[in-house]
Image (cartoon, helix red, strand yellow):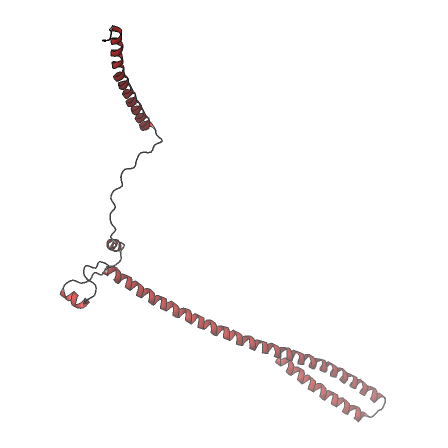
Length: 214
């Protein structure tokens, strides 16, 4: 049975509605993508991507060594150089100059280290000699101090003996004067006084000698 007029209209509308809805959906998707792209482009929080780095240049140690000002001794070329060097470094060995410079520096540093080592050894030897002299001087000083104390003690004893003898001489002189007044034996008293005076002079000499030693 063929559709009537109203049914044909509904069928035609349904057939047109599907592609129209699909087209509208695609337009909305495209609009959403464009909107997202605009927002991303306008957002300042996203940092710009850095430009690509240039390709790295390989290092050349030989040129760096030469530009730094170090001397570079390159090997001689030709038959004469081969005869002199024999089986040594080749002309293609660009590290030859570096090895030569490093070897010279090492020899120089070793010589300086040897000089410093000798200086340290000499300083240590002088230090030991000075310490030995100081030790001997301390022993000698101690001996001298002991002698000084002994001489001081001797001088003190001599001084006390001198004072005692002086007092005895004075007493003897007083006794002599009294004896002469009392008419006693003058010869005995004078002999006694002479002995005391001799002892006095002896003590006086000992005191002078003790003072000279101190």
